[in-house]
Length: 554
Image (cartoon, rainbow, N blue to C red):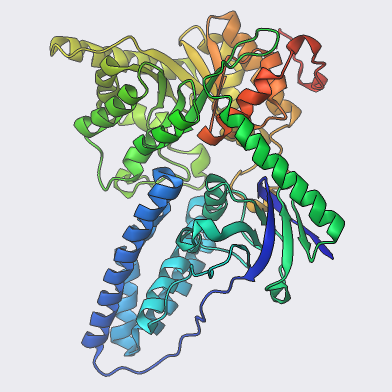
């Protein structure tokens, strides 16, 4: 038996044969071409076929992992049409009189290196995307099929790394687990693995010699067993059966209240990125939507979505949720979420740059268009609005002035709207420290633990080199959460959590003991957390977070 450890991306147990997944041979020969016009025609035909493949992949991904996670294929399609990328390929074919395969491979290498060398996380992440689309083009030009064929039997995929396109093309019914040597916890493929509920490990030193051998992936401990001993195999099979029984038990929790044994009630909501995610929200019996990421309306468009388009989207969500609360986060473009038509200048540190509410307060017409759509949709359901990246009371007061303008315009036009709760995201240390003042201005707080952790610890959450010291359980982060809850309650605000930490069941007791009013998580986490809540008795809990306790005078 061989034992290896890595970082777990999704918990679960997988038992099966290993398939050592290798990308198609990408060695590209340089060939001299006399008829460059014909060669450019070959390239254009390959590019058109690649677009068709990406569109098909997008549709497949939407059905399997949701619109938000499928967006990577729209990014790839846009990159295929990027003028600089296309011009470089055509220029190499024409000036060097070489074959299209060589021109594409050279351009792909050049652009990938350029992106990888940039001092910007968003653009560094694009290096892998350029490689993916360039490999796709080379495969088409060479008459090779793109990756994704894993055979007829269920297997554990072992690979150096996996591109999102490869992951989605694989038959989900035959995927037992992923094990890769490279990649980060925030990579597209890692996100897809979590969405598809497939155990996955990264950071494992892989061996081609494992191909065909029996293995166990333990997503709970981050362990890979190759040729497991009988005792280990028996233990893992028993754990697998426990997981199956646990999932069956969870289905019995639908329709139950989210209340502890001692009577503490909490609102358990779900996070979504599109209308198509509502089916998962309803299937998992969430009490509402605690975070609708409206920026995906912008990311999926080639121009600013107009008021009517946005209105129809928000109206559909509100109607489908049938009176349950729907909290929509206003435009959160910037940092790692870029749309070219916003024409945001290059920034040295985009995570702390021109983003989210800062864009809205400077480009008020964009903001007012979204607000009009939201208030119009509020006549059809229970919509609430929250504003991201707040750092000052002045920002909130300026938002309220713009909201008043919008409501006045709607009144003058005779357009109906409902009662709309308005809140802010607490995701900066500045917002935490003045949360007592902010609470007097709004109806609720929603704590965005992803950015709050990043800004509090001064650690880029997308930098895989820092994964070992990125600690969302850091006492400073937990103290800030507690302080926000206390200040919110003292000044009339209810307080929720919508970041990934809300789904961390090792902290569920802590959050309820702190007095949190709402947790908003990915739909698949709703029932497991409900089970946890219904088994808790806060009277008997002795918290282990003494370092979290803060003086009320802070």
